[in-house]
Amino acid sequence: MLNYIGRFAPSPSGPLHFGSLLTAVASYLDAKHNDGSWLVRMDDLDPPREIPGAADNILSTLDAYGLHWDGEITYQSQRHDLYEAAVQSLLTNNQAFYCTCSRKQLAEYSSQQDQPTHSPYPGTCREQHTPPNIPFSIRLTTEGAHQPVCINDKLQGRFCQNLITDVGDFIIKRKDLLYAYHLAAVIDDHWQKISHIVRGIDLLDSTPRQTHLQQLLGYNTPHYAHLPVVVNEQGQKLSKQTFAKAIETTQCSRVLWTALSTLGLKPPTLLQHEPPEAILKWGTLSWSTKAIINVTRINSTQITIDV
Ligand code: GLU
Ligand code: ZN
Image (cartoon, rainbow, N blue to C red; front, side):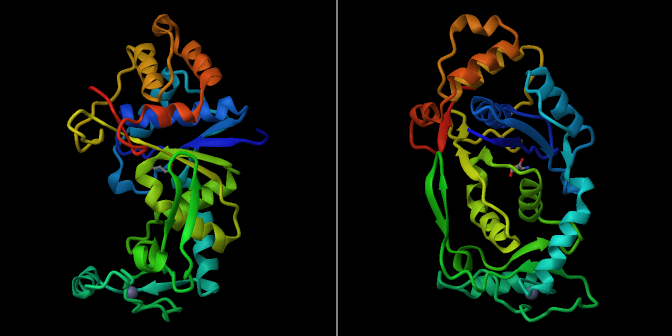
């Protein structure tokens, strides 16, 4: 495929675990199988949730696994000017507004709603188009989004969301002045000309919001493939919360081989003893998203592994 540009965008909130390695490997193989490039973007947008040293740790782990990226790493922490420019243009076009609602007010509103047709945001501040002199967040209006926003996901199929009733006017810049992930991700994907996004299914639900933002900002929508979540035998997601271990870099070949099998490929047993680069080369040739669909035992949203 011509002009395939893919990416892996970890948040430096901890070391890579097996689930995040799987996302890295799947996005890498999908890109390389299609003769594309594979970029790495560090989503260091939220300092309070970051762990010192995690970004470097992630990068050295990727390197140890032979997942060598193309071009320079992009750091979201260095791109605030771009995000601010987009926020300002959305404000100027009345597509965004200043919101001074407190958490308490919003919680009271949602506890009073018993009809699912109500928007999660009451619309209180929609007409606030000049900066208030008390702390504010900036929300994007979903007022005009009467049609559901749909994506055709390569692994999950068609996925639609009604932004008015399912999401409501959502935050693009927080009260603490941090930019929201949706905004930053959409802007970076656009500036880096990302054509294909392979990422975890936990982000499927955010994709219509991102598509809506892409439309408002005049950007193309990339192709999406959301990977099933990896769960342990108790059905728990492997994440920091369920104490998924950081992956070791002492047995990269064995772990990488397991990652390929988890993704539904059938790497030859002897390949476990080859260097990571050789395993990735085999994976690149053998890659097929159909393999993932075949391996998922319950449905396309979960892969169960014995860890
Ligand atoms: N940084 C996000 C995460 O680690 C991923 C963002 C993306 O792939 O769009 O969950
Ligand atoms: Zn408000």
